[in-house]
Image (tube, rainbow, N blue to C red; front, side, top):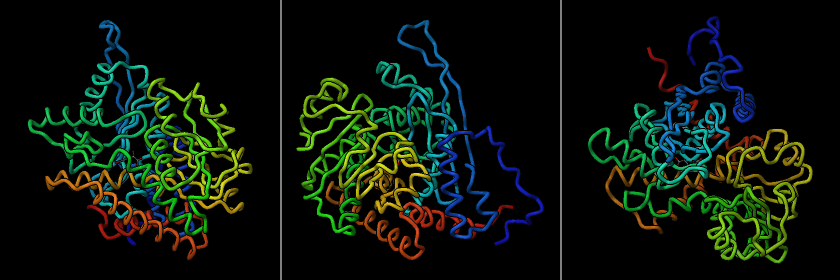
Length: 432
Ligand code: GLU
């Protein structure tokens, strides 16, 4: 391809600007895949950094009127080649530019792997949402929306929930954006409440999608889910729903956890009791349906299916040798490091990598956006049937690529996603 001569070497971003273990992981994964694919150097350099990054600081007034806090927020659009950009907004006390950039890059590969007409984006605000009252959360959300209002839009960039945000936060974003333009624009965000144009099934879609994929992986591994045991790390939206749908298949859930504790019960955890307990107490700690263990111990439990559905950087070279599962089903983004990947692959663990494993969320987001633009609503059965069909074909594409290129499922999924974006970039050429 002709993207100019290599004499004018692009000045790549200074290291410190993006210094972050998560962005480093995303870049290293990409570079490894690029090498296997023998990707054109110019294309490689264009995909290595986000196309647009906005970093803002803004005031957040607490309920105590005189108390005003300066808060940092980000919106990163990785690639604008494929259509509008798409990706969640995360509220977490550790969010930084590198983390948001990594998540945006993964959104690009995820959308491309799923054949969705989007590039990847992500947003984040460095705040602990659990420490905010509801009015504080609303003010923070509205002000952050105004800070990024020029960047988002139904044909530009469409936010959605991620860690620490939910349908209510999306409703406030939708309202703030609509106030600005002067008419209602439901399709500016996905993951909204149903009465505002949210799609039925969107809230559970990430957990549900992960388990549709576990069913495919289990077939491939000749494992009967009804005879299997599972451990789920994380009891938020993704982990909780993944556990529920696994239990519906007859799988015995022997371990669950949240940030407060892990719970282990070899006879199976009663999920509805655990959910009730968390609804009443806010956290799993103190739940008497099993033995309390740490999150580190939880990951090492012997089981058939291990589903990390919490934070990044959980399975590393420190614990990968001791992970004791047949299928690793990643609901979280970036839970496994590259070094750990190698160890797990050598040990024969079958991987459902994050960009495939948690793609159910953005896929039903896409359904929501399509329904909004057509002012038409699908039934839950229609949504789930289409979700399963799209995930199963992405699974098959990834498995075939993995066999053809003799790479693990993560590299295969990356190659599928990157290949599609690279092809689109070549076809569009360079302006001017
Ligand atoms: N935040 C979710 C993800 O990481 C969903 C994004 C979306 O629905 O746009 O995939």
